[in-house]
Length: 567
Ligand code: HEM
Ligand SMILES: *[C@@H]1O[C@H](CO)[C@@H](O)[C@H](O)[C@H]1NC(C)=O
Image 1: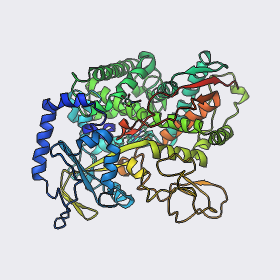
Image 2: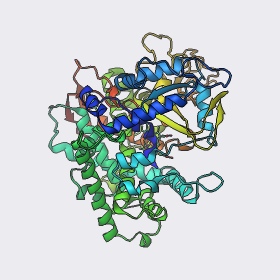
Image 3: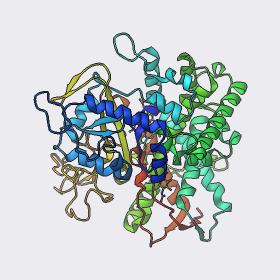
Image 4: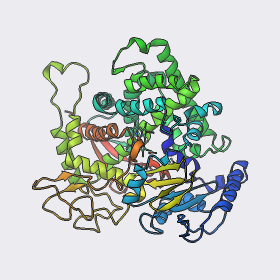
């Protein structure tokens, strides 16, 4: 279940305007949460000081009871989580509390490694059920179908395991390379077709992101869901983007009357997906397809097999099925597209880096075979070569380090247990924040010149190790340099509990290999096809209101001039 990754954010208040807040304060929705929180506070022990007798984790102090950390969470979630992580030093979970919901923040490499390893006591939360309903429009009476299912011994049941396996094999190995190839060709076709609007003369465009995300999202959708998802629903990218702007408010269950536009965008998405489901069902019988990797109706084998798994789970209602397909479509786009945009922006902003990156890209350029020259679009880049290049990998890893702000949430589902020596009760929730760890100054390497390569800045070489240079590499205390080689090599060694844009443990993002290919191919295709000049007077910044929801996009518009480079 994809939706579970954002379950924490069901109660994420970030970005809500004060007006909405005041309106909401009067609504039964909020009152019920405040009441729940009040009940909660009565039963909580050890809220003020560290209670060593029971070794209950401490709570981050707050000033206004009932509201607790809510205001801080709304205005600056990043600072709140970072405060919690530093409150008692590394390894001590610290409780933060919002009306009706509280969680221990887990921080520091050792504690996070323990967090990901302990699959016995820590499960993904059942809030995914709320999310599939609130965000993706599953009818309320059917949402319970999406609850994680267990065998009597507590392990995931047979269908759950089949889903887990399906997502792993569908997004790795030979199927992955087929998806990456499909994506590349779709993207190259769109860029090629843009020749009519963007010619060999400069044109000014108001927002580079608009252009990139339109092409990339369409390519991802046709790669996974086949050709008809877009031809049946020509406005799907616009609808998706509008929906995604409201995703935070939908996740937390803000009512329809407050955000009618959000519910309309969601409805248009659900309708589009149902149209696709009907069309595929009427025109294609999967049982006659055999083992094909991709066909135009269902798209990838991964998505086709998932339709069968939905049936095996007893999810037959078309709207409930659409909600699950929608969750997948969202997972495949929401994080990787802004990450691809940031990779391109960082490259364009630095002339030296741009030159180096262009060199690497051109060495991965494939000369079209003569026999194939007049056929339709061929792959232009050797994806494997791009993905193994040390510099490109470092730029990629650094982009995710700086821009991904995912909250990874687990629940003590079965019993009380001890976490790093602290007593956690059954039903309590632990949270890891990828961005907080990415900003941990005790861990990250800053090179020879700490002031210009501090953790809050983009540094393209942060993940490169040079055996001759003790300051190089992603760790402040780089233990072992890769031996002898004079070449720079890419490394994430020693970062298992620190570089965690994709989470970790059993629910480590299965889409990470595809995302890496998508991100690198996007920059390769754009830099090869176009010359792009960003507005030199504008320094791109991050839209922090996406904190907690995965990759944070750039804030505002990125105007630029662009022209097509003939090949
Ligand atoms: C830069 C891009 C991406 C980032 C930062 C990212 C991040 C994450 C994170 C943090 C989780 C785990 C949440 C948890 O453990 O609770 C996750 C799960 C997931 N992601 Fe991604 N993701 C990215 C791209 C993708 C892509 C391209 C796809 C699909 C093609 C995808 C599909 C999924 C799915 C299906 C899950 C749920 C896995 C499960 O529940 O076992 N992701 N992602
Ligand atoms: C930041 O993101 C929010 C949510 O998507 C959006 O409504 C807002 O317009 C964005 N702000 C800027 C300046 O881009």
